[in-house]
Image (cartoon, rainbow, N blue to C red; front, side, top):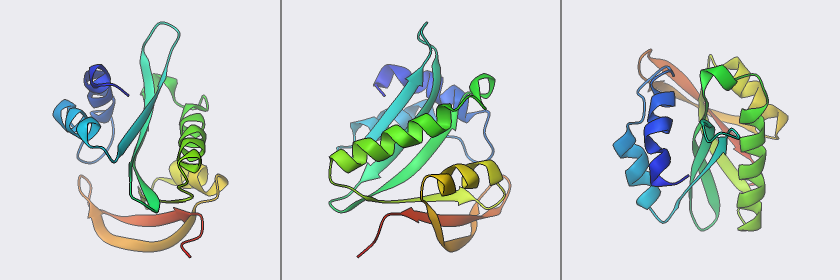
Length: 142
């Protein structure tokens, strides 16, 4: 992802439940050295989806996976996640954590199919609507 992708990413965020990331939030994240965001774009340059994470020395936290509504159910989210896992492995980061809305069954299935396992719950983590987050991890923490 490059800063010029921020408006399109923010537009996708507006279609999602919860508190959407703003264009400014994307631009600020992209300036952080520990941030890594990838995108999926159509042949004509439309941003179809993105996946972002923050990396530490030992692991990474996926902070966002989103696909534009008109491109959902085409495997884009899975492809982004697969690419992110590969890219992080090349950097030596094999432990990946994330939070997901407890009601987001499609995302939970996507993550589970890629080796993520539920390791905990954050009560009332999300707003709009208020909801628990499942904490999921891929890879061994020890």
